[in-house]
Length: 238
Image (cartoon, rainbow, N blue to C red):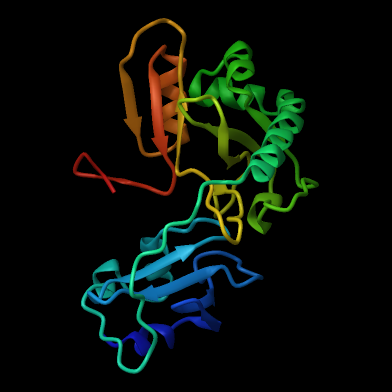
């Protein structure tokens, strides 16, 4: 498949680095947030820095599958010479995130019953994990539009060092975007994983595909690590 054929299915905003910036077709993207690049090996990479939509979701939205992103021919269009890796969130961004987590945690009571019924998370557990709640009036530099459309329970993404480097919001009402990520900073990237650790001395960690499964494991007394924007296929994390 030609690179241009795929771009013709997208609303292209313009060139971006060695690729193209487009409006993401998988969510209500008012600001172009989808970066589309083609590697020299013919692998097409799509990265939604606004909401974190997966390549599978983007492909489906334009009538393709991820298999169509392999063996793509560049023609005369830009081709990425190397895979860029963004830096972790800066200290300033982490400080913003800490404030956001603290503020949302102060309103957690509005999500407490949902967390208890769905995952078995008690108020004591929620306090340890600093779970939070945001309403439709939530604002902030890194809050994407879909996050603000419905009330959400906030799950911080902590590293093994206890530092938060991301967060996800789970819709508490029916919504197309059930789990929503923070908006990606221009030159940095929020963490793709989070850990929920107990202090009972057991080093076993269950690895899962998202916050929901991790919260259920944590409520059962199991340490958990989850990766956002992934799915399980035949027992393999992808």
